[in-house]
Image 1 (cartoon, rainbow, N blue to C red):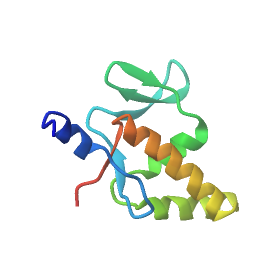
Image 2: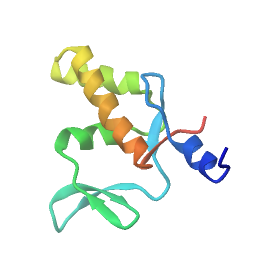
Image 3: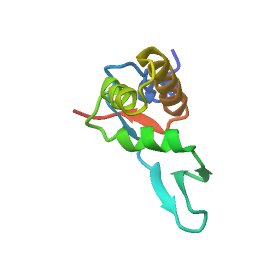
Amino acid sequence: MNTAAAPAARRRMRVSEASVPTLARGAKLRFDETRQRWVLLVPERVMAPDEIAVEILQLCDGKRTVADVIDLLVEKYTAPREEIGADVIAMLQDLAESGFLVEAKS
């Protein structure tokens, strides 16, 4: 086993409804006055998430579970839970695989 790869692999989060996500160290969600939109600042990159992604990221506060986030969105948008849940988990998993989202420390 390559021990150099092990720590990075451990840091990658497997997103489930029980996960408690938060932005990784070095990642920040900020409103950019110049662009007049929310941006996700990550080392050496600026990402421009859409409105729904911003709303989801704002709910990833290290206290709420993914299930809590899904339930809040289901209530707000009155959409099927399965549909919202699949979309939320897929988005968060993409961010986790990029290293921008981690499991909150309890």
